[in-house]
Amino acid sequence: MPSFDFFNYQNNELFCEQVKVKDIIEKVKTPAYVYSKNSILKHFNEIRDAFAEASPLICFSVKSNSNLSICKILADAGAGFDVVSGGELYRVLKLGVSPDKIVFAGVGKTSEEIKYALENDIFMFNVESQSELANIDRIASDLNKTARIALRINPDIDPNTHVKTTTGKKENKFGIDFVIAEQIIKDIKNYRNIDLKGIHVHLGSPIYEPEPYVLALEKVNKFLQEVLDDKDKQRIEYINIGGGYCISYTGEKVKRPLAFATEIIPVVKKLGCKVIMEPGRFIVGNAGILVSRVTYTKVSSWGKKYIICDAAMNDLVRPSIYEAFHRVWPVNTDVPMPEVEMSYKVQSARLNQQRDMSDELELVDIAGPVCESSDVLAKERWFPKVKEGDLIAIFSAGAYGFTMSSTYNTRPRTCEILVDGGNISTIRRRETYEDLIAGEEEFLNER
Ligand SMILES: *Cc1c(COP(=O)(O)O)cnc(C)c1O
Image 1 (cartoon, rainbow, N blue to C red):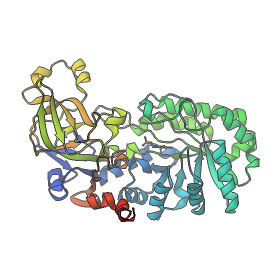
Image 2: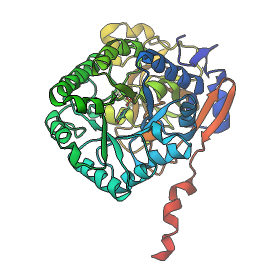
Image 3: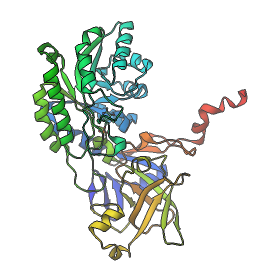
Image 4: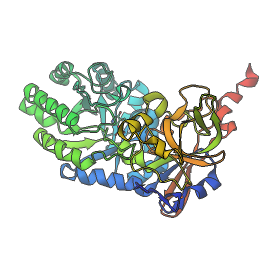
């Protein structure tokens, strides 16, 4: 059986580190997110070691997994944080993270958020427009502060990922194009409370090849050579190369951080800047699973089979909005999970031997209970025969899983569980029905 990232099968049972997933679920019920602490640390160390030569400040992308206990693990390991809202900033400040390890990105920071960040002396704003820069300058002046900023460049590079997770092409709302960036740099003295410290580039996610990073950084380098005089060059002290490092969702081998670092570091060296990185998915993506229970199985008269489980698009929205692929497999099964699991269409094209598998496996859609046709977690998969009450695991759910969850259909958000060796701890309790109406109930009698 394949073993990956601290989730593996032993004697037909799925373990997270040294704990049986079934045992966790007996205590906490389903659906539940289960994370492996040592997997998180392993990934953090791997990316840090890969880029060690550039000694980057690694700012964990909070939006990928914002749970306080997860952020605490990374803070203790020495990470900084990349936040994209006042709420995320609040979270990391709550942890006591040093403000000089916090960078703030996002295309629409409000005046309140900017003020909050300035009052707390965060390290840097990644600025995405002239209007935003003027606003930060004004607020910094009111507060008698200087705001450190990096210009987020939109280099118009295609990172070859899903259109909805592409951020560095000219049709995307993110960043500043080179022409405007040049104007800003030329006018920078007019922004009296701004200290231009660096350049930021984030292309999108997940990115499977180093080339887009290299191309983007080459473009930035060329731009800086052309536009900056020597004095200005000195002030570009930092290059923030963003996040986007891929993980394997299928079990297929994908490039590891070292492969990215080998190509990226030489270009970064040409720039002669200190490096900031903002990985999210790579650190937590394969460190978490979503565990769900089969509620019903259902067959149509034309033979289509559905497994209806108690996790839904509100718990894990990536398949619905990005057509994302997550491996799914029963928690207890004597059918080995394939080394590489792919969608039926890919499988058919590659193997063309599905009929041999049909004794143990059946072709199913795995769907949740939400009233939307897009509430399908896995489409057309060859899956071991399961029955009502069986547990299934949805893999690679540690990034953009819980953080993108909602209470749609008035479904309480799941609990989050952290495993460390043989220890299990709850790091977020399951929401209750009372939680869901808490902000509304008080207004009922006023009307
Ligand atoms: C989302 C985001 C990241 C993290 O991307 P990952 O794919 O999770 O590594 C980094 N930087 C910015 C600005 C982002 O918006």
